[in-house]
Length: 233
Image (cartoon, rainbow, N blue to C red; front, side, top):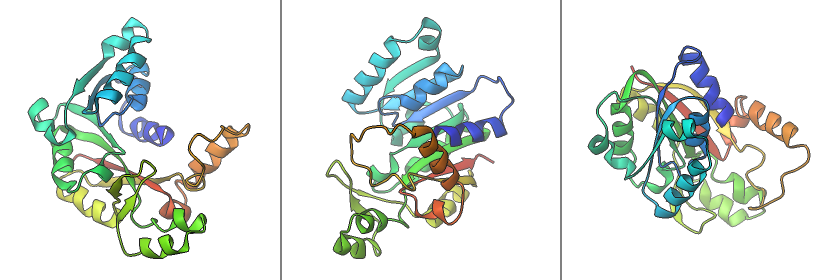
C-alpha cells in the first residue's frame, strides 16, 4: 500500500514539494511517520490512547527534524471540521477506519472538506465484494456461503465490523467532490496468512507479486482490502 500511495503522490505533486498530510485514525503512526521521514508536514489524528502512546514513542526515537514535522493529536476522525479549516491538507489518509464506522458518509465528507483543490484522498477499506474469499480459502464453507449476501463480518480481533463495496464508495466519492482517480487491491494472496507468521526469506518476491496483483484485473477485485484514491475537484 505504501508503494501505491507513493505512486499517487508522485503522479500528482511536483518532486520535492513538502506536502501537508493528515492521517485520520493513524494507529501506531506507521504511514504518518514514513511520510514525515520523506520530508512532509504530517498531522496524525487518533482517538485510541494505546495507539497514541505507541506513535509518540516511535516519534521520540526519530531525529529532531522529523519530530518537528509530525504532530500527533487526540481526536475523532468524524470531527475533522472541529480541528481543521477547509482546504488545510494536500493529502488525507484514512486507512483501516471505515470498517469501524456504521455510517461512513459524514466522515468521508469531512475528509473531503479539509482537502485542498487537487488534493489526494487515500482510503483503505475492507472489500465488501470479496468477503467470501477468506472463509472459502480456509475451508469454512458455511461462513463463505453466508458472506455473499452481507457486508458485515467479524475481524481477527473478534469485533463485528463492516466492509465497503467499491461501487458504493465510487458514488460516495463523486458526491463529496473527490471522485475516484485510481484503485488497487491489497492482500490478494496473503490474506489467509496467520497472525504473527514469520516473514519469508523471499519477501521481496512476495511484495512484487502482491503489488502486481493489486493493480491487475481480475486479481485486485478479490483482494481482502481495497486502496481507493480520490482527487478533490
